[in-house]
Length: 283
Image (tube, rainbow, N blue to C red; front, side):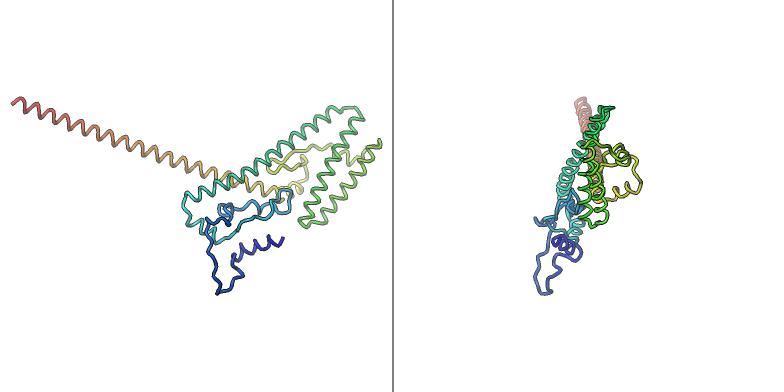
């Protein structure tokens, strides 16, 4: 927490905020090893997921807005291309990881749905399936409560823990051969889906307020920002490559035209020279 606060002060007031007017300070360059190159390009991924399951911890490098402005205004194009390539590589590695999480979640839901269908009218199999679903729900609620606790939402976290305790009691009742309450059975029967952005499990047709909370959550917003940045930089790169290719083709066409003109001119000169020689020979 202290390191994060210090980093925030560095960004707002500069790295040398505590230096005296008489102190000699080193002027940072965007090429320095201690400067965060991701922050130079767009943003640092370490800043996106504080107090979430995807938390990367504090960035080990410096975030300096003055250096970033110098990079944007003064850095040559080859340096910017190099920094952008490093940024894209890191962001894509994170997105590949969340894509694997999404695929795993979808496979898990498909297996769960298949198990429900196979359970059919077999009460024992159905009870075992409900115990498994309750266990998954309890695990998800506990993790979500921990996340909310880290973010300071104590009241919401306590509410989720209370609900998980209720599910634990009903799970024990199932193990003893007793049935579920109507509300819990209805909740377990709700269809789930996986968020295509961050990989979280969502209830199909859930209340708009809960969906809004998910969409505005740090993890969802963070992965959406990663995806948008990668798409924007990639599109700009494609557009630039297309422009350079067009310029290269235009330059090539111009060279061909010049060569044809030179060839025609030389041919004409040779023809004139030959005709002159024939006239001279005739006399």
